Structure formats: structure tokens, C-alpha cells
Length: 205
Ligand code: SAH
Image (cartoon, rainbow, N blue to C red; front, side):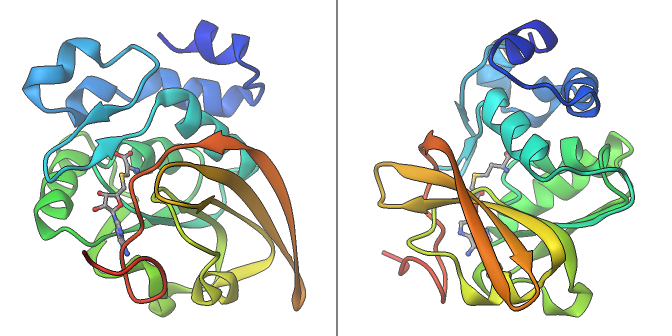
């Protein structure tokens, strides 16, 4: 996979391309779909969740404009794959997952593979993770009905947040940049994520 496909689709950041090449995506997948690990598409995990398409992981990482020194917050650990990619591009990654089952699997896998700067926390990511805020970058990998205010508040000045916002079927990937008490947004394209379920997003069932 990766370098050629991603570069062809417009990913330019060399550090992102290198991270995508380095992280063994198959290790984050259930056995049944491991053989498809290096195709550029989303795949099923347990608990009805999905691991994102590599291109989208790369696009989101690139949009965060990381230089290696940042503290990053990810909402929606899932398999832990995107967190592993981010961990190669930043100093510390805090990642919040609402499913204790997925969080446990991801934590074990990340430790096994040596991604020691990733911290997996079980909880409702729609309230962020105030104890380690502010974050230089925030990546939300589940679909939100709006940008939760708590996440906006936990973004450091000058920091970027990427977040899919829209309905259940499809969303627009937004890049939100904090500038003092204001935020500026730009659109990165159409995407499809599983819903962000929590206090400041979609209701549970
Ligand atoms: N980044 C993941 C893919 C995420 S799929 C990867 O690389 O594999 C979306 C994940 O968001 C699911 O695991 C789902 O359980 C989780 N999720 C949904 N709502 C959440 C919330 N409020 N807080 C934390 N995690 C949430």
C-alpha cells in the first residue's frame, strides 16, 4: 500500500507518509480481515465499529500539521491504529474510547508494538479530557452532529482540530483552528464515520 497510493491522492507531508508506511495496520485488525489490511478502505472491527480508510487517517494527520512536539487528543480509539500513526508525529497522544472492550484491546496492542507515548482512556470523548488540556491538536474519528464546545475549549491557541460533522449517513470533515477566543473552519471533503455517541453528541440508541 501506502506511500504511492497516498501520495497519488494528494498527501504531501513526508512525515505523515513515513508514519503510514511504518505502522503495521494488519496488527490492528481482527484475523478475518487482516489480509485486506493494505487496501485503501475502511474495515470492520468488533463491537460494530470500523477502522478508518488509510487515506482518511493520513488526511486527518496531515491537517493537524504536527511537528513532533505536540500533545494530541484523539476521540474514538477504535483499534488504536490512528493513535499509533499520530504517536509517530507528536510527543504524546491521549486517546479516549467509550467501549471498554475496544479500549482494552487497543491498549494491549499499542503496548505490544511499543507505542509507549499513547495513553488510552475509557470515557465519553464528547467532554474531552480536561485533565491533560490544552491540546495542540485534536482528532475526532467518529461523526458528530456539531463541534462539541468542550473540545473547542480544550484546543490550545493556534491548534487545529479535525472532526467529521453532519448526519448519520455522511459528514463533512472540518478543520477547526483556534485563534484566541475565536475559531476558523475549513472543509476537507465528504466522509463517512460511525456516530459519536455521548453527552454532547448523538444519544445512545
Ligand atoms: N480511530 C479508530 C477508528 C475509530 S471508529 C481507528 O484507527 O481504528 C470510532 C470509534 O469511536 C469507535 O470505536 C467508537 O466506539 C468510538 N466512540 C463513539 N463515540 C465515542 C465517544 N463519545 N467517546 C469516545 N469514543 C467514542
